[in-house]
Amino acid sequence: MNLFQAIAWLFGGARPSSTNSTVRSTTTVIHHPADTNTNTNTNTNTNTNTNTNTNTNTNTNSVADAPVETTSAARNSEETTASTATKVAAGVGGASAVGIAQYLNNTSDDGNQSEPEGDQRQQITELKEEAETLLAENFSETEEAASYETAAANTNTSTSSSRTATNAKNSTQHIIIGAGPAGVVAAETIRKLDKNATITIIGDEPEAPYSRMAIPYFLEENIEAEGTHLRKTNNHFADANINVIQQHVTRVDPVNNVVELQNGQTLPWDKLLIATGSHPIKPPIPGLDNPKVANCWTLADSRKIIDHVKKGSHVVQIGAGFIGCIILEALVRRGADLTVVEMDNRMVPRMLDEQCGGMLKSWCESKGVTVLTETQVTSIEDNGDGLKIQLSHGEALDADFVISATGVRSNTEFLEGSGIKMDQGILVDVHLESNLPGIYAAGDVAQGVDFTTGGYSVHAIQPTAADHGIICAKNMVQGNSTRHKGSLQMNVLSTLDLVSTSYGAWEGVAGGESSELIDSDRYRYIRLQFSGDKLIGANTLGITQNIGALRGLIQSESHLGVWKDRLMENPLNFMDAYVSITGNHA
Image (tube, rainbow, N blue to C red; front, side):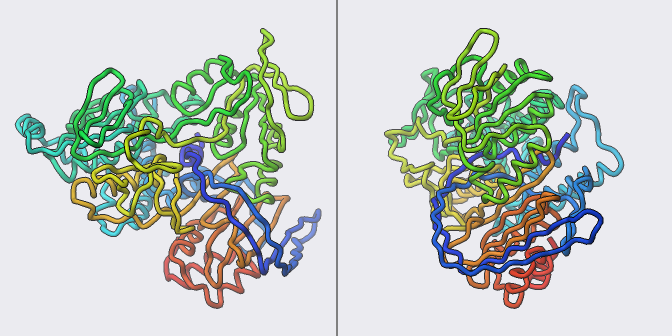
C-alpha cells in the first residue's frame, strides 16, 4: 500500500487569483554529467515584470517525508521507503495523520487487515504521537486535541437511564448535516462535552460514515469497503448515543429551526452544523453521461471503476489536478493503460508552478502514463465496442472507460432561500458560525479566514475538516468559546511515489522575492517565496525531509534576519533556518 496515497486523499478548493511582481529571484540548476561530480550553476535575475496568474489552489492534506540531501544533490528515489513514508504524515497532517495511524493500527472485524508487527507497529505509534502533537498546536487550548476515540469512550459507560436523559426536554438538539470527517469529529466532540445532548448525523450516501482519503486503497482492492469507514466498530455511534440517518436534506428552515428530509420528515434543532462537503464538477462535454464514464468521488464511483477497469484496459482521464493525480496512481496500480488529458499547460496547475508541474509530467511519462497538456476533451462517442474520445487537437483516442476529474464544488444548493450567506461556500466568522446565529459550517462547505491572504476561502482538505469539526462542536456547546486562527493553504501530493508540496502564497506576491533550485535529472525542485524577510510560500518536488519546517516558518510569520540571504542563496537551508530561528525541530 502507499501511505502517501491515503494521506493525500484531499479535495479541491479555490482561492483568488494573485498578481506576481518578482523583484529578485535566484535560480540554481543542478546538472549531473556522467561520471563527474555535481556542478551547480547559479543565476540571479532582477526584474520588475508583472505576471498575472489566475491559478487557484486545489488543497490537499497531510505531509511528506522521503530521505533527501539538504546540502547538495538529492539521493535517488529508491530511498523513498515505507518507513520514511510513515514519518511523513506527522510533518503537517495532524488530524488526517492521526486517522491514518488509527486505521493502520486496527484489524477489521472480518480479518481483512493484518495486525502490524515489529518496526511497523513502532512507526505507527510514533506517527500517531507526532500527529496528535501537531493537531494540538492548531488550537488555543490543549483539550481541543483530545482524541476522537476518547469522545466515544466517555459515552461507552453510559447506562440506559443516561440515554433516556439524553432525550429529555431540556437536552440540546444538535443536527449535523454531513457524515464525513468534519461531521463525525464534531458529533464525537459534542458528546465528549455534553453527555445529555441529542446528536443526529444526517448523511445522504447509503454507507456508514467513511473517509474519501481511504478510497485509493479500496480502488486498488487492498481493502474492503469497510476499511474506508471512519470508525471500525459496528456499534461505535450507537455506543456513543449518536443517531446516524441516511437521508438527503432538501431544505433548512432557520425560522422554525427544522431541517426537511427527502422522505418528508422534519427534524428540529437548537444548533445546526452544515458539513455537507463537495461534489464533482460536470464539464459541458457531450457524452459525459455515458455509462462507461465515471467520477471517482464516492465508494459507489469506485465500485463502478473496479467493475470496468481491469489490467490492460484503455482508460482516458479528464483532468490532472490534485484529485486527478490521486486517481492516476490508483489506475496505474490497477494495470490500466492510461492517458491523462489536461487543459492547462502543466499538471496540478492550482498547486504547482510551471517548472514543478512540468517536472511532474515528465515523471509520469517516465512511468508509462501518457499526459496531454493544453488539450481538451470535446466529446465522448460510444461506438459499441468502446469509446472514441475527440480532442481539441490531435488524433482521437480509443478508450474502454473514461474518468472525469475536473474539480469539485461545495454542496450548498439545498440552502438556497435559507438566508444563509454564501459565496464559494458558506461564509463563516472566526467561530465558524454563519450569519445566522446557531448555524455553523465545517469542511469543504465552509468559506472561512485564509491565513495566507487574510481573505475568505474554502480549504477542502481533511485536516482542516477535522479541525473545523472540533472548533464547531466546542462553539455549539460552549457558546463561541473557541476562535479559528485561519487555515494555511497547504497541499501535499504523492504521484507514483513522487511527492510534491505547496504551502502558503506559493505563487508569490507583488514586490516579493523568490529563490529556486532545479534538479531535473533527479526530479528535485524547491522554490521559496518571500515578502520582506518573511517566508510566505513554497513549492517542492521530491524534497520531503523535514518538510514541516517550511510550514513552521510560514505559519509562525518569523522574521528571517540573516537567514533571508542564506535561503536566497540556497533554499535547501530551510531546516537550518527553522531550527536557528525557532529552536524547534520539524
